[in-house]
Image 1 (cartoon, rainbow, N blue to C red):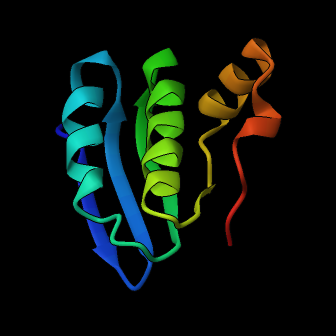
Image 2: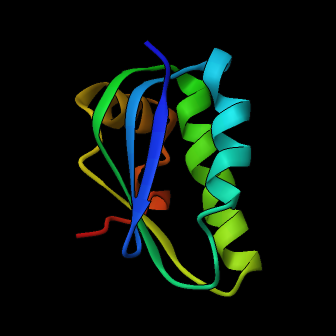
Length: 97
C-alpha cells in the first residue's frame, strides 16, 4: 500500500506507511500543503511507521516555521507514540485537534 496525503481546510490526512521507503516523498509532498496557514496533520490512517516517521514530523515542523505557521499532529499511531517515548522526543511533537 502506498502512502497518501489529502489536504483540506488546514488539515492533512495521511494514510498508509511512513517508513524510510516513503519518508522522502512525503516530505516533498507535504511542502505543497504548507501555505502560511496553520496545519494539523492527522495520522489516524497511518498503517506502519519506523524511526523515519519521527524525522518526517520534525521536518514538517521546520518547514511550517519557515513559512511562519504552526504544524501540529493528531491521532498518532501507538507505534509512533512508543517511538517518541523511546527516543525522549514526546514533548517535541505538538498535539493538534
